[in-house]
Length: 345
Ligand code: SAM
Ligand code: SF4
Image (cartoon, rainbow, N blue to C red; front, side, top):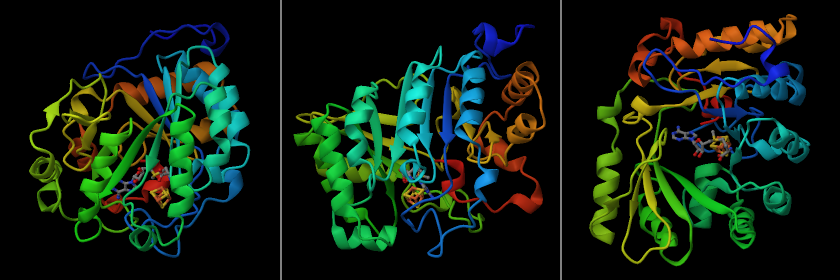
């Protein structure tokens, strides 16, 4: 039960559970839909139609919502986008976020192009881990996947994070015919450096249509694991943290781990503890749903904290059991998926 007093005022924490017994603990906050890369699996070459600025949530609005969610059990916030560092004044916003009562862990997912100069500030505010998206170590291939020649700046961020003692988790999307030859060199980084490297099944989320199911995916989690094992020998499973999406493995002699995220096969829904907020204030209780609450309309319509908290709680409580059910519940006219840059990954 939610407190009858204003939750933000009292900071009452009572963890919210959905109807399938999963707790709400983690918020993925897309701070912008804009990006300085054009990864072909995420956006068309000409980019997506960006929201006008006034339609994006302001930092004040994000702080208010995150504060409310903290009273409902959220402990961890990940900033994503679009590219988070494309939004001005991200670091001061993060510093304020870190002050919110109840928020224990702030992290971010970044493409690394603009990140290096901000690494000392991230370290100072206690950011412990950063997810760095990196699909290949080859400059020409990087440029063809992202349509921008920015690998050197991404690598600068990679080494700046390591030097600052911030844990680096590399996210690589596995793309048939594009970066399969990059998987072993990427995984091999975990041998000589204390980094985790996670391979993500490619999802058909580039603003295009979405017709085929997971069975049609050329590189699903099973094949990715077989590919890694052919090179490294048997991968030893590591116990998954509650709510984790990656199946992690250790490799003998490696400092870091490798992981596989079955994003399209959706093997991890049973323990999903997260909620997503899009840059324009849409709430998604599953990556595959169509957006279940327009929280910006509530904020800008003058609703008080209690009313907004009740709407968030109702949205979370009645969420789909898994990504397949969420997908089936989408209205027919919404069967083509938005770009991941609006969802935040
Ligand atoms: N721009 C930042 C970045 O790339 O790290 C944050 C936003 S991006 C949408 C978040 C994550 O989603 C990235 O790791 C990216 O590789 C992943 N992603 C985007 N489109 C995807 C797709 N179609 N399939 C699988 N992963 C995808
Ligand atoms: Fe930008 Fe990230 Fe999408 Fe690439 S995956 S286009 S870096 S938002």
